[in-house]
Length: 274
Image (cartoon, rainbow, N blue to C red):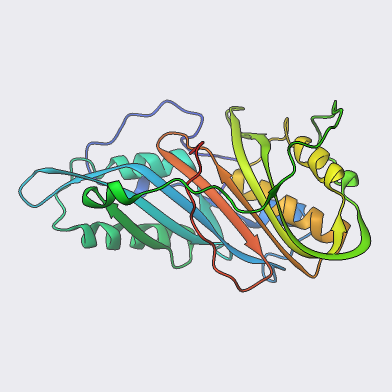
């Protein structure tokens, strides 16, 4: 696989009229992880990439259109991620496909994504009769965005801003100021990020400056979160660390990577910007 070829992301595309699993375009994770000094076979973290699909439709057995929201969970240990536009095209290939039940839709998408990523992907649907029960729910934690700072550094990424002192804490910090850019199209990607850790207290001003230094950084969502996790781990030496970014949607999809060296399960709170 040519990891420098990002498939349909930067190209004009004809939208499919029939189901086609070959539209999925996998990208190997290993090269980006090696750039961070990680051994892809022995990662220091676990986690998941949560994809929310807001434009999901198919035909029932009698040809009547059905709509739903979809949640995909791709394990962080999977050898491959899937390029976002290819996933959109794949999901759109279901629009005119007759599928007998919502359960069959879940099984089909989970099967195809598992094959593309090389790991067991889970798929769940929120059907139309459940829409009214959906709620907004922001990331929990203490927001650091109100810190009074003069900032004039927007890249490249500056791990040197990260530092900690001897005071031992367990805390959860949140910022809504994370922005990076798509490495193929250059379009901006916007996110809120939650950092939960235990260890020497992280300097909050330095952390905010560090997050803002991603403003001109080109990287896929998953790679940005893994870079943040690695920089915090190396510079601040916490003994427990999780990093969770909630990115705004594009093309009916949002991508929300979570990396942690703990055993907790990641929630899927839909924020106001999503």
